[in-house]
Image 1 (cartoon, helix red, strand yellow):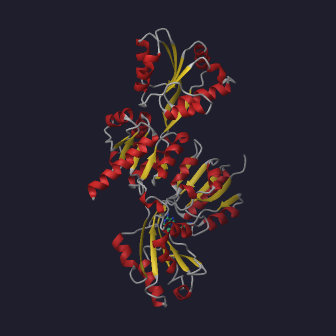
Image 2 (cartoon, helix red, strand yellow):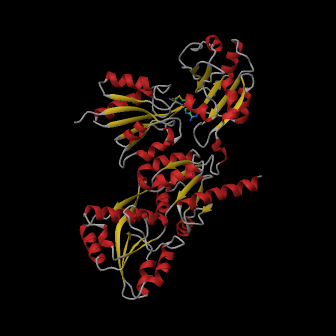
Length: 511
Ligand code: SAH
């Protein structure tokens, strides 16, 4: 058996852009990912299919797995020959117990590698406009635990020493003890007017921050109901936040956590667009695409194609799978030169462009129905049409073209299947009220979502739904899901726009 290995990987504070390149690379090769609540959920986007996910999530009073159990689990998994990614929030060696886990691995002769992450102690203040050092303010910063180990007598932290330090003080895990921390610092000589910031869920769409002084901060935090996880920053650098706060504040989707349910391969493009508008995009693929690999189907398709007048694509997936098959068969795209090509919308046409193929027909409204209407004036009886599409597809284009005398061959070149791997994570996130919007870019994602939801409609809470177009919206309504945003232009941009429109309409109502 090949020996296993454990990678202790930091996932950064929550912003998907702050996951390291090395972390992404290792996630893509992992057999198992062992993660906890603080892990940045964007990690899901980088996994390969079939990876095992183990949640050892710990919230401070509700331990799901003890540290000893986690340590032994890592050892066992590695002893089974697995490549294990132990994913932690921030940096694994900053209050993450990464050191303890590494010691246990060494003691059991398990090979391991640590992969540093972007620590919240620096990135979270930065995201609130606070540089932890600045030449005009300090020459050092200090990262301190605000959560003392319960088994220690008295205080493990010498507040007299802390109060005398000239640098910025950064407390992690300190919200619960904030009042006591502030009081101790003042009683040991720090000025009560020292500025303090507390930043909750920094580097995510849910970020909130409050500013006060050592004297006021405990009350300010209580009033604002700031909770864990939060970083507390003590020092005059806090004053810079009024100048250095981020410009993204005015983006239309700011503060929204939006779920992307498309296939793993397609999710990225929607996520990018959502993030550009200020949202936190969370990719949980609920469907996957399975190409039809039946050689006789493809033989028949290419033989029909050699006599056809039209080749029609109703999805990006169809184009990708068709082109991949051409490559596998070493079939030159020049063999398509006598054909006219139709694509349902601009994204599908863009996939064709990858192979240098320019669609002859793209309707102005991006539905299969509009595509068949657009083709009607261009076809004549007896023309041969090849449809390359999903097994369950809208029958309308077929019947419309047949009704005007075309000879249509419909090839189911792929299947869309539900992807069950992430159902448990999805349910957890919904239960915690972590998802503001769920996006559907196809009817199959709606069906897969309903499958994932099962009997748990109660989990939906205040979650809203957005659809790419009328067909998808109709499927969602059929399942009883209320649609708050429906794209006017049936593209990913249209979908993002519809969410923004809904938010600005509801903020006008509120104001
Ligand atoms: N290894 C982590 C810290 C683990 S201790 C790191 O390097 O960031 C857990 C504490 O980190 C939390 O209690 C909180 O103080 C802080 N923390 C982690 N992520 C955070 C975030 N996104 N926003 C605010 N605080 C965060």
